Length: 453
Image 1: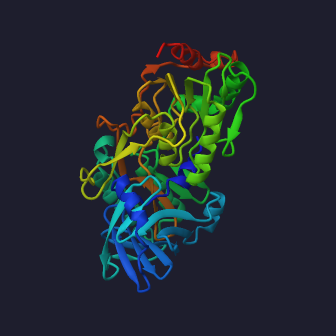
Image 2 (image 1 turned 30 degrees about the horizontal axis):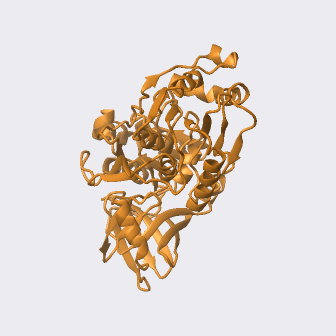
Image 3 (image 1 turned 90 degrees about the vertical axis):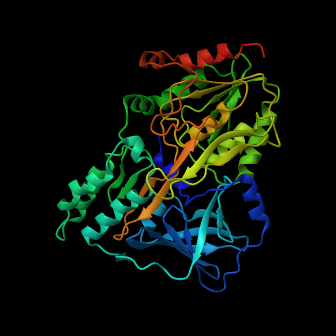
């Protein structure tokens, strides 16, 4: 699993609202911001400072205000962060020269999913205890702890008393605490949360809150062999690839369509639509479809919705999304996210979706969308359980970290964060299967596709 993909595409300081609102926002002119404007988010803990076409972003808590980055607002209202302060090297490593925040119009910031974050106009930057950059260990500890205290979505779920964590670790930090010692302390703290989208970007690499389970390690170790077994043993002829390998497809020996979705880390809707249109044309004669999400590393949620739209006969609820806006159980009103029938579509009799413990993030929301459709059966193993977008923050010492501040729920209202989305039918693949070139999940999918519509 490449968490880098999630970082690149889930850097959203995102959103609450409806898709209809998003479309309406895009019809309106961008804000007139010749004068300096300050906008404070509801939840998410950030402030935008807009002056002309210049944008500055601040991370804030009730006690702190830290400059995060700077960028620009384009004529249509799209905001991009071009620089995270003193993190040029990290941006180069992530191949991310700039990050899209969304389209800003009159206090609403709309992302590619159509999810809207609401902001209120303020007159001045807040006066806080900790202001600006500092290497003071105590100040950095306080900002880190408070950022989770105000924004992390899942304290009741993980059953961690964060205030007790403060009492345990705060005495260990003083003026003489080294940078390495502080990082170790922060690591020990947030690893108690075991959260997939909470990450510290250390000088020697990324530090994860979540520990991997055995089946995740199994799939990561064997993913290349499993994919090779599929192409060598089950496919009729060569497969085609779109979007630099993010989409791979072809026909099985039985004539069924096989679509493998490796990642959703493409943010250009036109490129995605073109690739999907070509795939629909190439597989136009197929009636049964196998969608392999087992190796999907995440990315843009709207990409997964577009996949579901290839099979949707009508507009249908995919999931709901909300952000933490106050106390541990205080969230914004759930925003319903819908699958819209695509301009290009398949005519499908049966659809089988394959999942695994490394189906992650946008791969999971995409699976949830597909699962909402008629004719879909999900088989394999439960997904990883990383649903919330990654909310990125900057410590006063300019170290980046992220946390989960949102909650996704299925159409029936279930939250699968940290639990993973379960399949309709559980099928395990073993090392002996892989070594023998076999894939019992593929075998079962082919059986299910034989069902009469």
